[in-house]
Structure formats: structure tokens, C-alpha cells
Amino acid sequence: MKISVLIALLMGAWACHPLVSHAADLSAGETKAQVCAACHGPAGVSTQAEYPILAGQPAQSIAIALFQFREGNRKNPLMSPMAATLTNKDLNDLAAYYAAQKAPPPRSTMSEALATQGRALSVQYACVACHGAKLQGQQQMPRLAGQHRDYLRAQLLAFRNGQRMDLDGTMTSAAQSMAAQDVDTMADYLAALPTE
Image 1 (spheres, rainbow, N blue to C red):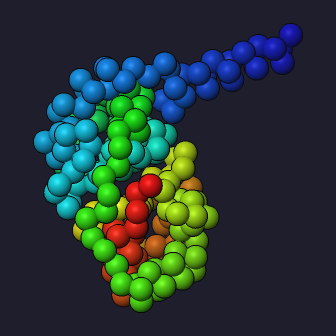
Image 2: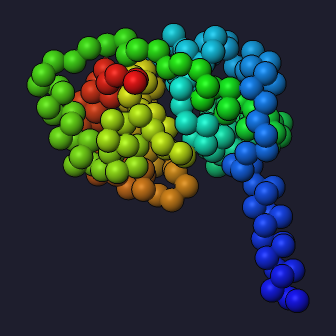
């Protein structure tokens, strides 16, 4: 009897977790995303290099990022207050909406030398282990391919300098071992990767 009660409690807790899909509503997500467009652009296609492109990101990665901002585990003077009042349903609606949008093609190109060096660094720092072989993102890991160079560089530096942490420390550990030149090379390489 006690085991069945424990199982029921655990299942109930999991069902309430913000990262479990509660029948996300794309239409509601689109409506809620209108306020986000000022920085992240229409349909999540930011044209401002300091703000990430959300279009085509894995839904779970967006939900986790919003959850971290809401809970104060990730801080940003613009995003923290925006996320503070989001409900779990809001997180999932927004995540589903942005995940359903088409990621734009990369805005930059790369030389063969950058492609070779970037590929080697993405293996050396184990980027491909979590973000996928083509760095398209998967599940809770965001797509890095085609993201804005300035945003990527800022985030890598924040992880490297201990100003940003991730849930399990994997990204923090990888970035802290990066040489300064490698941060720039990776940002250039990732920004030029195809988004499909």
C-alpha cells in the first residue's frame, strides 16, 4: 500500500514539472510571444546579434531556459522580469510555438580553414556529445548552428568566467577549459553552420 502511494506521489510531481508537456497550445504560444518579438524578432527570428534566435530551437531547451530565468537560476536584466510571472503552461506554450518555427539560414559564411578548426574544437570540447553531431540541438540542449555570433560568444564567455551555470555543470566545465581564441573561433564556426 505504501509503495503505491509513493508511486502516485512521484507520478503527480512529475506531471506538474514545468518541462512535462501539458498539451502546449501553439496559438496561445504565438499570442504570448508577441511581447518577446521586441528582442527576439517576429516568429523568434532575432535580427539583433545580442539576442538569441529562438525559431527552431528544441522545445525542451526553451522551456528550461525560461524556467531558469523564472526561478532565478539564470539572470538577465531583461529576461528575468519577463519570465518571473510565467506559468508552467506559458513555458510550454512558448516553447512549442518557437520550436515549430523555421530557423533562418546562417547570416555568415566560413572558410575551409574555419570549418576544419571549428569541427576539431567542437569534438575537443565535446559540443557534439550534447548538442548533436550537426550542433542542431536536441531535447534540452539548444541548437547552436546558425545562432548569432555575438550571442554565442557572450554565452561561452559567461560560462567560462563562471557568470552563467548550467543544470549539471557539463557546459560550465567545457567552457572553463576553453582558450580565449577558441571561444572566438567556436562562435564564428557555430554562427556559420547550416540550421537544417
